[in-house]
Image (cartoon, helix red, strand yellow):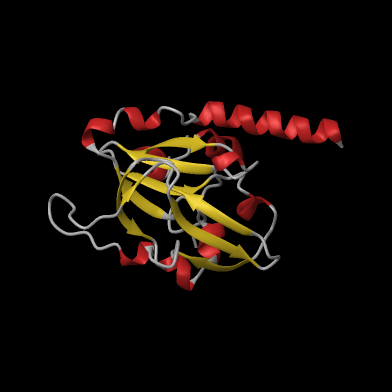
Length: 187
């Protein structure tokens, strides 16, 4: 029986990691402290075709604190449900129009905490992720892929300006480091 030659560990480690689908095709933008609430950060994944996928940033309390999500609701008010969004045709007729601060959904945790997730970009709501309603844990397990919140299509004229007011990956990492330092210095 032939044996496989051993591959040195150094050789395996030297191979570059293959970037994920998200890293390859999307640019990450961040909105820190949404609506003035500390650490409630959102991540906007912008594709080259200008579509934006709204997700939670890694430092959001739902992902950080080991919280358990009890439920997620796209019912924003008595008259407005993001689940009622019906888009059709080339010009995306019927899509709900969102402002930067428009609420997309509410996340209810088992400890009684409630988090409202905002759009962070102006545009038309293309779809919401109904899978997280049935299995809220995927929001925590795979926030950038299967656990996304919604897909928003900005107006063509505004597609270049939507990133104004958003942070790049590097700027966001600096904000998180400053937060961590401030938290450890007060302790």
